[in-house]
Image 1 (cartoon, rainbow, N blue to C red):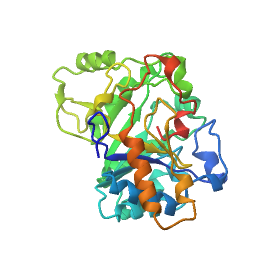
Image 2 (image 1 turned 30 degrees about the vertical axis):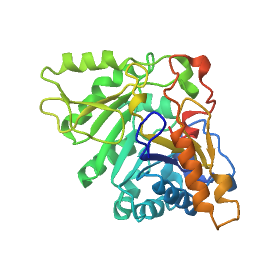
Image 3 (image 1 turned 60 degrees about the vertical axis):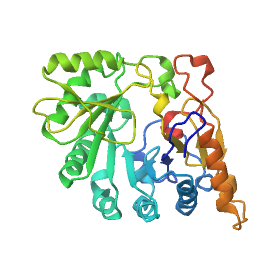
Image 4 (image 1 turned 135 degrees about the vertical axis):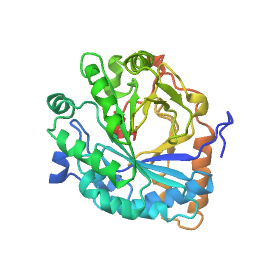
Amino acid sequence: MRDRFGRTINYMRISVTDRCNLRCRYCMPDGITKCAMQEILTYEEIVEIAQAAEDCGITRFKITGGEPLVRMGVETLVRALKDLPLTEQVTMTTNGVLLEEKLPALMEAGLDAVNISLDTTDREKYRQITGRDCLQQVLSAIRASAEAGIRTKINAVLIPGCNEDSFLPLVQMGSELPVDVRFIELMPIGEGRSGREMDNRALIDRLNTLYPGTTPDPEPRGNGPAVYYAVPGFAGRIGFISAIHGKFCDSCNRVRLTSTGFLKQCLCFEDGADLRAIVRSGEETGRRSLLTEAIRSAASNKPEAHSFDRPELITEKHRMSGIGG
């Protein structure tokens, strides 16, 4: 499927969450606003939407949150998505706290790759950033994932005055382990409205200075806009996702489904389509065609570009964790 600007749309990020239970206290980020369970799509409803998405040419799915692993039985969703006839890939983004114990079931279900969010390797800074003392669980999960052979990436967001000194320790994680370490520029959504983002161009310059012989890696390594570099002697790659200082909207290939069933066209804007209303309409006859029509219409009318450089034009008011960013 192509949008009105000719971009191919073939990738959907699907946000899931779970009812508040004891387990959530140890692995959900601080400040998460929980919604009533009846507002959240069931796995069956997500699969129904994914079937319609495949009718539109969307064949790659990313399971996100919030934190997807707090939702019980999430591996059954992985399997259900993998079993759809046109699915090419199912991946997941997680904070990694529960990953090691869930990894065998996820791999058995067919998960193709995992992204693990990690902004520092310093225990105290990790606790300050996340509100949890779970760094060792995450580091252990990264090693377990890489050693199990599943494609593993680390996503890091650096913020001046907070964790910018974590750059080198994070980079060095790609030395021993075959993991891709990616640095993502902070986008002005939610807490990102502070405007304290790191410029990835400066980080790339620093990488080249620290490791002479570093070269761009042209090999495609995922579904997104990351630019990768090969460091001599490293088992993994170092990547940069530069939404602010390397705008890549002209090649954006994705839409986002929130846990409450709203299909977002762009992180920057609140526009989209309410798919939950369709899957809960009670009219099974013709519902798939209605979903397909709604998905196709929303995706084909994606905005040409975000307006992160003009914050006054941003209409999205939710936190990043609430929209599957």
